[in-house]
Image 1: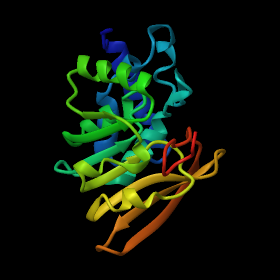
Image 2: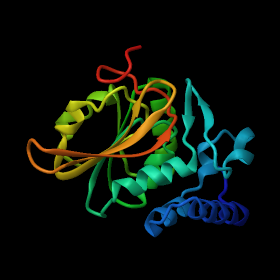
Image 3: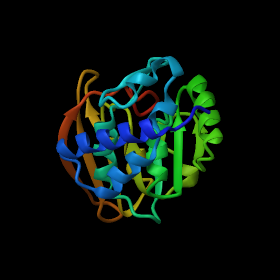
Image 4: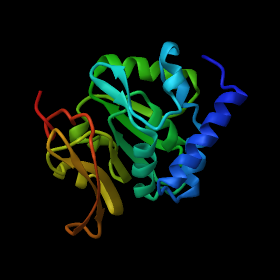
Length: 217
């Protein structure tokens, strides 16, 4: 594992101030991003890009999300320390590591087997205790449901009903929904067994959610 130096911590503080200027208000979320060494989720040759507020390719056609996007989605979740969270799309593991700063009960599923193996090793080396799975995240993890919060980190053509059914009453799903070029961030709160309330937020651009309830590959 590469070092997390005083310089890296200073770069994170600068990044957090940038995110605050861009409108992130939840101090717990900002503290979580300040705690996670984003450069350790990059290949060493590309670590100079780690504290820029931009997405970056990580191989397998995937990216590590822009820090603003990570902060924005995490803020929408309104995480509580006792929440059980399902993350759809482990990717590099960076978003997962941020979630783990806010609750220890994180379940994360990755579609791509190569990415899953490298990220599982990385998070294990960091001693981060997520429950990691390889499979079709578009259908969730019904055997581990219900969840208090579900976060989808890939663009979906629709809001998968199977994910809504895995929410506790009072729980929330945060998901980007749209076509393959741009998506609108949505938060869906389960008000009762059959009632769901949907809110719409900013537009983003994510890699596509693959699988049975996502984009077919």
